[in-house]
Image (cartoon, rainbow, N blue to C red):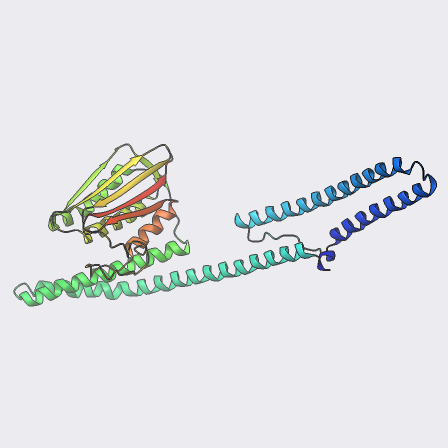
Length: 343
């Protein structure tokens, strides 16, 4: 039987059999020697044998519990980040076979993690190289386009095409920059440097960035929140995340619509909310908007490249925060970002 392959189980069965055998022999001796009074001794002998069996079983299960606790501790060490943590499995038996399989699983997970890490670094390096290689021709194209715009002052058709090419060049540059940022975040090569920052000041900086666009498109951008609210964050990266969400709001609103940014602080969290009165997000798209390069078949936006919201989500999560979205068609969209409060 496989169960008897375990040395501890063998010892348990051996001791139990020994106790039963000894009790049986003593019972036989008592019956042979004292047949009239054996009825007085046999119950006591059975009781003693039972106590001995209970003691043997207690010692066995205490040892098993110690082994299991040790295994649980090693598993927790592995979950906690110690990739070298392994369960001792030098004995034979079903339990140690299980431990061996757990160790094998840990080794497989380590191999997958190493391969994934290498793939991320390779992707980051590749995209970084490509982005750097693109900078020179993009800069040259921008210069050439600027020269053409200057020469086309009196040629409306040429001027129109040069303006369109400028927009496309800007899109390419934005795509390259966002790709580089998001792959660096994935590869863990960007360190989020947190400092105590005033949320109101950060939002005012963002408002200045979008003020011209809001005026040009006839939209309204409003800010509302406690001026004393502060949080531990990387100002540059968090500004990037909120800006991407506000940009998304502007991309899906019409003239006369409003984009509002509010923030509040409680004892446990700092919450930043971006709300718009735009077209809303189709229910079919709500579970996919944070996927990279996702394009909705219902969206009228033909300029987006599908990286702004995934980048925002990556930055928020890098701050140990969460981001949620609610939307109704024709009524607008609300993005809610929650961060643990440090005050």
